[in-house]
Amino acid sequence: MIEIEKVYKSFGKLDVLKGVDLTVARGEVVSIIGGSGSGKSTLLTCINGLEPIQSGRILIDGTDVHARSTDLNKLRRKVGIVFQQFNAFPHLTVLDNVTLAPRKVLGMSRAEAEEIAVKQLRHVGLADKLKVYPSRLSGGQQQRMAIARALAMSPQYMLFDEVTSALDPLLVGEVLDTLKMLAEEGMTMICVTHEMTFARDVSQRVAFFHQGILAEIGPPDQIFGAPQHPETQKFLSNVR
Amino acid sequence: MFDYTFQWRQAYRHLPRMLEGALVTLEIAVLSLIIGIVIAVLLAVARDSKSIWLRAPATAWVEVARNTPALFQIYMAHFGLGSFGIYLSPYVALLAGIAFNNAGYLCETFRGALRAIPETQTRAGRSLGMGQAQTFRLIVMPQMFRISFLPTTNQMVWAILMTSLGVTVGMATDLTGITQNLNARTFRTFELFAMAAVLYYLIAKAVMLAARLIAWRLFRY
Image (cartoon, rainbow over all chains, first blue to last red; front, side, top):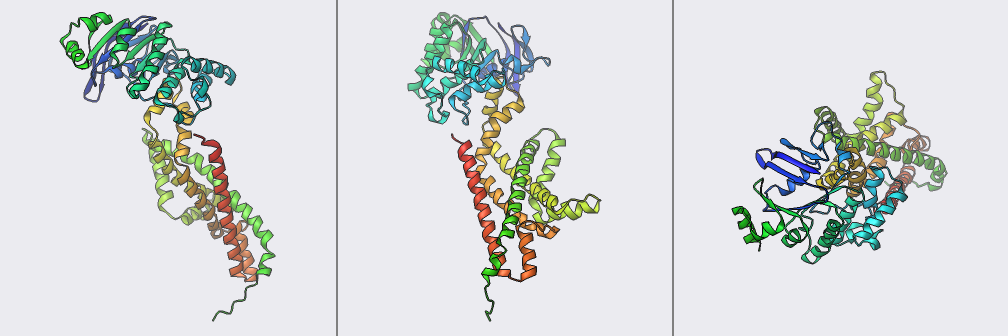
């Protein structure tokens, strides 16, 4: 379970998150929508401790992410994240991109790590690209590789930060299909997204962020069908 | 006016001795590069560190190495330290001087390359549970070496040519040292130094070729 309690986060004088509360249960898929600069992506980087917070706390299975005593490297094995920019490691082949962390962080042998990597890459449809360098892949393929790379660590939670925003419209579908597949398999996911159809079809709950505040949260039918908050109404009428 | 008689045959007889010297030159150049690269990586990290205790000495190193003559640096390693009772042999002083110079220049080359690697690469590494040092070693450093490859080869050639300065601290076994001694004995100045120049050229070419091969092997992407 991910518990976010009264989280405040600022970059210098700029307040990005102003007291966010959100609880995500095991197996749940929550989509976060909202305008640019509303703090959606920042929240994800706070959840896996890539960014510090000013107050409040975030618990993952009861472990306080920002406590001094917390071993973040260990915690991050539980929480995979995929970014908008795919962040493929350009100097490693697709297979090595995926086996690197299992070998170096989990201490697996090359054979063990490759077995898992091949399984994950097959899962996302890249089994024929093992020996290829990322520069030879399309954006959608690079993003699917990034997903396989995160999954190879067997995380219990996955965070997706606008994973389709940097993609050619033609390639968005293949990545969203991969996310749908993961959701159907029961992965706990928080997806920051601009894909409203995806948010509606795949998530159990949709959260709307506005200026650092979680303005409204509820089942997709409610958020898309009968939004309560005026800002949600305004945002959705502009999106459509 | 032009009454110098070339005596190549006489000079050629000394070629084996000069080749031995060329090997010593190559050895010093390669060692100084390896030491220089290792120190340069550490300096590059230290120069971007938050701690002034790391940043200040690293900056001082780079400033001195890049803004004073290499000759001065080699002199200091031999005669300068000698004044304090630390005696380095000509070989060690030459090696230390050139390694010092290499480290200073390569540090800045590497720092430039580090700027070219997106911060998100480090983020991606950290998000997979890798530590800071691990991320640097496995993800950032290999990309840094690739980006800085061409300017690094410049320094490789410089390192080879700088070894000729060793003669000023009494280095007698490298190519310049041996050529100098042969010249003093035979006065075949033009022939001997022309041969030495060709050998330097060949050493530089050989090192560049080796660097290309290594790069071709390592940077497949």
